[in-house]
Image (cartoon, rainbow, N blue to C red; front, side, top):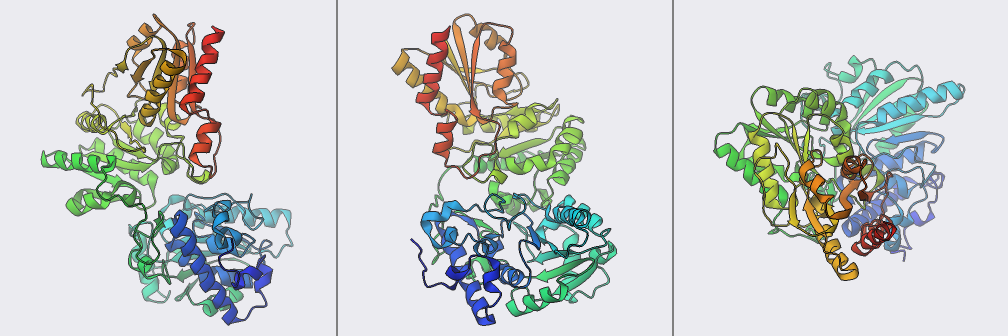
Length: 592
């Protein structure tokens, strides 16, 4: 049900519908959009501050420009909610029953006003440059405007500079909006931001101007949250015949006090109470794997180990602010620069420090060259903790299921997958102590489990046979350990098969002795991994048994981008429920 049938927004189906509105009506529209952003995000989670900060900019853009002929590329596109409401997708914000109809990022499948599926940072300028080149080549008489919107936080990513460098060579229309809210996900890091502050403090007149240095025209706009101001500015630059940077100062979280006061917390929020700002699903006393890791790092530091913690602008994912408060001189946040983070860690490890790098699986792909060329090739003893390596109900832009495929194909790297917190800490201790190779540990995402660590030295992987059975062997990796237990129970119940249950521990190394002896009294080996099957752990086991008569079944995600599909639905599609897995095993057994 539409919660706001009286809203002016109900009359807006396309951007053309706002062009005859008065300034007061446009302000009313912006306020309605602010309310709808907060209502939706407080119910289902999403980006708060980034969207509230660009309300006026977005309304002004669609008032002045002619979308979709004029094309706008939103960097990350996590700030595109207002844009979506003005381009035919308002029901996804007005009606809670339709909240899930609209993704949190730009999507050409949703609207012809979106030009790319985007969810990662720093790419907008390069994409806009490409659009401009194509416009000039295919339609040389076109007067269409190409606009990129990039936040100051995103400027720390290297491809942003590559885009600026190439933009300067254009001899046609390109408008680059630098949305400067003095914030990334966390606080901005690096020398660039001293320069941006100097430009803000001098109203854009400082000679220390990186944009002009690169050969780009430049204009500073102080109040980007003033609607009339933004309309005037956009009218002045519309149809410009050369590239220009509009450096616009905005306030992240504008119009909602909790988001203004706590910008990091309200960058992205899980469902929360609008009045109090408190999480609806808060579990402050709940044990977490991340906290266990930080406690172990404290112990290592107390013991004199030169440990440092590194991340690329995602401290909240691992609760790293706690580490920063205790050990500020050992904490390094590179900003949104995953490549820099890994390369610097390689150098630190080579020089005797013990860097522990914290990476999100979906962002790790941005540093794949550094994983290969710097970390693996140099066999540098970096320790890395990877989170969100899991089959996810999130957007296609933020799927974390490809990390096993990415990492396990590389020489020299040991990728470990603990099934419980004791095992994880055991692996971490060994990873920090050893100096022979890079070690990556896949932090579990499902509720924390307690158990035991069956080895302390992981230089030679010894599979843990948690239960010895026969006929069928279940190899359950990391987070799918509990699923493995459930499959064993179902096999016993339905087929009276007492299956062997194995914790492989490693995603890269194998225990050839265990695999060899399984063939003596097993006909089927089943692998369970919370990841993409293509290039994954299961295929490693497939290769081992390829020349033999052993039947191997792999369960995980197919080679695809899932997009906002509920997890229980994905599990049904992928045959990841215990009953489906047992049915598939039964078919293989009957075929033998």
